[in-house]
Length: 159
Length: 415
Image (cartoon, rainbow over all chains, first blue to last red; front, top):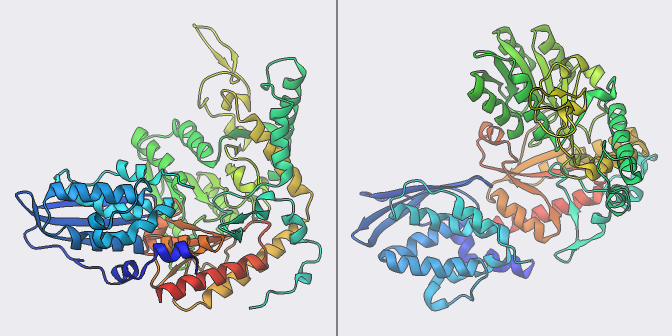
């Protein structure tokens, strides 16, 4: 198999895609948003229990490709317990990495480093960011995710 | 897996034909390109590319205007294409051929122009197979004038039983029957002639979305008995941004202008403007001159080959692909209507269509994945998306073998 492809579909990603973590809606969720990618039909809903500025619990449900399911699954694991400012910093770096604008910093990304390979597949950036955009909309309580930022993600060209 | 012998269709040499399509000779991602997305847009033969280049290199004048030679040449080639399209569709008169930017523009034009004569409560009948471009223009009309969209639903094979269409017609009030001849998402071929006859029997006009049919079937609008026929050039080996709306003269001539502007007028004053005759009345503004001339070249190209033999070859490749896909464990074909051609949709147990698309792309195989601008079709089959392989006149058995090998890579990865 091609090296780039192996980089994209790492074991960790395939594992999360097959058995997504936190694939449920947490009890007492007070933030929720639905994210759509109209270009490919991916759809997911993220629900969050937010206390003051901290994500106490988070879960998601929906359908999508391996990358979007794994991105949602790993996201829910990593942001649980974080405050929103830390989530913003993390997402900002993650976003830059998958867009190919920054080298992955393992210390910031932790297990999310496995998504670094996405930057070689510009058509798949939106898959890796759908859950994150949706989560951000949820915790900002802006209701359903609009897709403007998604479309921007889809317009990168790195080839 | 071994491919059938080439000798089956002796009068059509697909390899010779492939040599005329420069895009096919390239490598992508270090592999030979296997192009199986012709239903999205077909590749262009060298003669089309040359015809377009010649317009910009030499005959770069606007049409229908100046007396200088470049304008004259451009006008002649442009109007010669109108005659080529007339002949290709077996329409009665060149005036029945309106150039547009594509099928979408053709359908919007019809919906807006013909729709102005409809009233609240009148019904537009479409089928469950439609591309969004044969749904949304009618919905816009419904919002404007209060017409109602009624839908003849799919059966489990992705076919539209005629009795479902007839039942809706019998219920009364249907003024327009607008349907895809061939489904872009599934490849289902509808019995267009029968549907047009049915529409007429119940007093409705018929409009065929013929975008997918033009590359795969011989089209005779008089034999089909349709009132309107819309198609795009780019699925017929011609440039993007070209299309046609054919209309039976009497009906087409009754349409009010669509857009106002240059070329569509007879006389303009601030008090009163009079309009040009067909076809100019419906062709406001400078059209895609080079594109239309490229469409003319594509039609000449198609006329130069034995199309019956090409169709027989395509049919064989289609059946070969269908059989090979069905032999892959965990793969389900979506759309299994008895009469299908051109497109093969499928889903896999463990791999989402987008993952399929990315993985086969790394093997050089270009497939379309997604909802194919036909979300209602996806909904009917309860899938978010499919992977679709679609064939062109240049598709050969080796392309299908490469597809199958690449799909097996997906299967391995996600098993």
